[in-house]
Length: 319
Image (cartoon, rainbow, N blue to C red; front, side, top):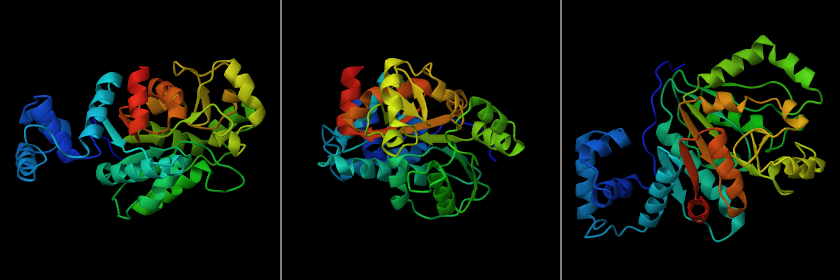
């Protein structure tokens, strides 16, 4: 398990263009860019030279991804992020989770290194990333599931994502071996007293990266559509101010847990513990999720946002 924590390097949908953007548009020095990207100054110099040689930079940045980079920088500035990845919004909404999932897989491939621990949630977006992960072996790494499981094991089962990501990196996975939703808060407290679950909680708290998505408060949200939580709770939760579900917890627009008994029955790592992880990554997109994303950014103090261009623009306009 990693003992040295440091903030992750800046990420992007196109690091070469982002390097050019930081230098030519924002006026950062090569040393400042090297520090942000966690690369050598020589690497920055070579990238800038290549951008000029390839026509990416003339008197303006001409690469097709420059619009995405502009949105990334706007998101980083507005929400205090140390990294944003913006992908083009696909023509069909049915492809959105796959597009963001692809970006998630590329992100994990770049940032996961030997000795690192990844704490991960579930959901359709993160499940979509599994199809794009490239198998490689990490030494002394691990993956920790942030959410309990479901008795009926479909793709929507949160523990499946953690187990499959661990398999792709050939590392051990640690799971919350309890239902994601129990019927009695007392039972939840008893479960968390078990040494095995306390160990999972400690590992999650000591993770290098926490990766999660967020759901909106609507009947089509995964948590209601697949009856992880009863759809009958939707109206009462909205009445209490809920705008998002995050690791199956329900939060309001300020990212605070709503006052409803269902939050006392969720078996998942608490949001405050997740927020303490050095690098919290939120992956979510779709205009219908804008309120949820804004709440999630506050709830877990995310440092990286992976989203699509239309959602990014709406987030900037709305905030």
